[in-house]
Image (cartoon, rainbow, N blue to C red; front, side):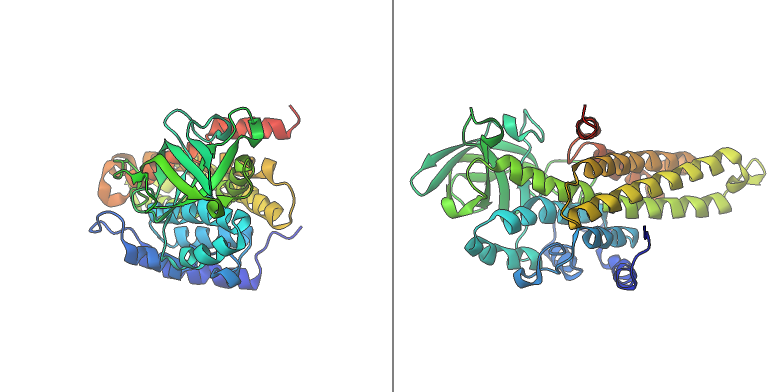
Length: 376
């Protein structure tokens, strides 16, 4: 089994990592900026997993994950990368895989170029990622559907031009009871709320989206009516693997900083690096990183190979998200009181890492999926 990257993958990784400074966090920037979004597209992050014929880069899951990992390790703003990942995996991929040919032709080039921003309108106030319990309803009318309901925590919601959303079309349909839609922001009856005040991932604005008798034409149905579960689960395979490559790059940066700090900082007459508890903590951080990386790469390889990646995706998401939180907290312990000073950036690492165990399915949900994959 070959664990090494090809020369082409290494070159792309190095190039992306070096260019990522263009997307570094900007404390002077307030809110969403289209110029930074277009620069994200320039690095290929908005269309990485889209064929070239539709305006993308044509990368598979593993190469897409490596692109996001490289951008993160190179210093790109985590919130901006999260916004790009939500756009690509939760919205662009469903359009690519399930939209009608004319809809793909109309939307994909603009989504890949950064001309359009997509928002993932799945979560509701009373439900998370359970497509079978959606209170948003889609009522069949001539030529399409009328949507009624409220979506919360919509990634890119306040600034999106297009929303991929899900609604119940048959309350008694079970697995086949929901349908996915691609809805334009300007559709009558759609109202996007202001950005929520979040403690982390600030560059990815999130907000509420309300549908009130919002008409969606038939050509904007993704897949067939009743295939909402399939559309969502397919997008989640990409999101729960490729998106979390962001946290591989982030952990790599944090560990590197902690090693440097441990070498330079002295306490009790010794370098921190010479204190066994500190060395042990750093070893654990490295172990978590590499374990999660192996699982994530395996999950992406299963996707690229056309296999059922469900078990590997759940294990990768669980391992990487939990590692991101644990490593950020360990970094706080290594930096001590300085971790609470904004100039060192450790408190930001903590704030950006904490949501990782919640979005894209909580850690408890991933454990349930793993148990199911084991035959329980």
